[in-house]
Length: 307
Picture 1 (cartoon, rainbow, N blue to C red):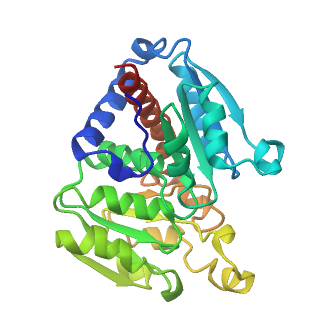
Picture 2 (cartoon, rainbow, N blue to C red):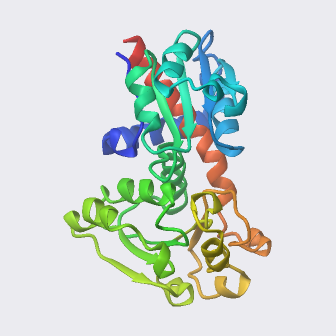
């Protein structure tokens, strides 16, 4: 039966744990998975620029023995002629066994999933969701910290438009013992609906601050984010806020020895390149973990579609 993943909440905690277990097995025994998607085709349907996410999906499918068809520029697709997302999804379903789609408009991936005849994975829809980045984040935290219980997680930067932040909070809030420190300027605070839906109903402790320096000593995980120019209507506001937080070696001295620093990438200048040499920097590990989790998810959805 066809099943799509549009939001991280489409996956139960049991399924999240199972996907991480499969990813760990892929890491340990890659040869066992090298032919699992033979004769299967993934279409990466990207209406918005991407390097990591698109290539991660493509590498994942190739390493499973499958093939990839790619649309990387909306201007060269039939969307430029006015074709709807619904029609595009129907057409692509004729060529693909599974679709990974990125689109600048919130809800576009759901429209595609409702009209496609094959599974659709949301690879990011505007400021809404980015579930496979969250899968990468979860695996990184679990591999580095051993689990989620008892962790204090700091989320820093653009918490208003950051789809990766919203998805991660929705996922982590279902694990016991997590607490949050929300670090942002007033203009980029976490939307109230995220707090009302994911944090407050579960009684999860959280605090809000504008000071990264004050937050650093409390954190087990620091999740840095980019202030996203493409989400701003006013360039003046972007220029005023884009350098609100810059993590550098001096600030790293305020953090715990076992702190881990994460970032969904791409970074601009919110993490100094000098931090890359710190063993607590885990953002490039996230990239690799993302490939393994996308492999795991592709396998799950194709196996379910075949059953």
